[in-house]
Image (cartoon, rainbow, N blue to C red; front, side, top):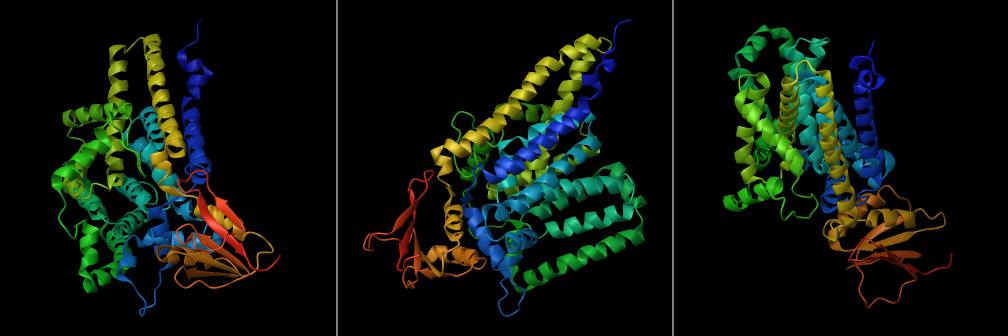
Amino acid sequence: MGKYIIDYTLYRWRYLLGYGLIGLILLGVFVVAGLYIPGALSHSEIQSVVQSDSLTFSLDNFDPESMINLPYHLLQRVSIEVFGVTNVSIKLPSLLMGLAAAIGMLVLLRMWFRRNVAVITTVLVITTGQFLFVAQSGTQSIVYIFWSIWLLVAAMMVSRRAKWLTAWKIMLFTIAALSLYTPLSIYILIALMSAALLHPHLRYLMRRLSKPKLLVASFFALLIVTPLAYVIWIEPSIGLTLLGVPSNWPDFQANAFQLLRQYLDFFSPSSGTLMTPVYGLGSMILIMLGIFRLVTTKYTARSYITVSWIILLLPVLVINPDFVSITFVPVVLLMAMGISTLLSNWYRLFPLNPYARMAGLIPLSVLIGGMVLSGVDRYMYGYQYDPQIAGNFSQDLRLLNQELKAKDRGNTALVVSDEEVPFYQAVAHYQKNIIVTPASSPIAAPLTIISHAAYTTSINPPWRIVTDGMSNDADRFYIYKTTAK
């Protein structure tokens, strides 16, 4: 008697292999993207460190602007307090939130789609350039993905009355409250509430929820959001920033074209801190297929949520086109719908022929494998070798930390430009025997390190020059010794 397909070991282990592949990719994000690619800091990451290091809860020195993205900056502050100011400590909060977001994504897709669709979509999504970049970037970009995914996961657990229901309710309201500290996140909450009010089944589920437990969860949320409400009361401009209202009205036509280029310009891709288009051509085809599925099956709860999300975010994105990460989760859902449509249509052609169904996996495997490899390849080579991209990242912190590790270094004066002072003061706070001084008033020390921005040719020839082959201006630091070691 011949073997059935289900008798083959590879078939029986297919999901275990898929979960293993997801784990390997996430490990690669931690090791490769977190440490080596790009392995440097963007200007936004440097500003994030300055903001995290300047956090204070003293009323005398309190800055209302520090409340924006406060949860992320608190995590980053803890990281640099424990490990000092290094590339790894700066990026560690994003890496951990990226890992949690990827796990949540798999859980969410597993609840809304078949297991094969969930595994394929997760593999595709975590290998896109956008996810790989924001998961290693030491900025708040990752929180848009993290909040969105876990809001949906918690909401689905509550609606399905999962185990530990009270804990899920508290988690849902807590995440919702914390997300309000992030600009534009309120629109995600409005989209979820709109879908819950418009969809009949979701309304029915809401009416069944225990009111006392909801009050307990609401109390936790109120405690979390109270400081933000107070700051908005004393500084209304913070509220406008969180709503995404610009101080000056932008050029809507230019912003609309920028959005189109970020998603659809495959003929003249641009290079910058975030490579565009943010999704490859294959991913966009799946997304378009998902839009078709969304239009034809608009009665489901996930369709209501996705449509509400897109409708609310489109006008906000036209005003703030740089916040592309906030569209990540709706795009993931559309991609999953596209993959589900592709698989279900193929299986519908051959409902009883197992060999034809298996034969369809060959071109599908080639398609998925090609998309995964092209996404990783584009990210790795783009951020390593594209001069227009690599030039947006600085290796200065890594080079400086190497110099400061010398055991016999002694007292050191770090001379930097006025713009660099806040960042290097944060670095010096976690180092011994180092004083940061602006170029306008340098301080003499046995060892003096002058940054590229602060150096002038009128200074005497240095003892040594620290260079970086990845920078257009390779001379990064000039080192002077006034006493022998």
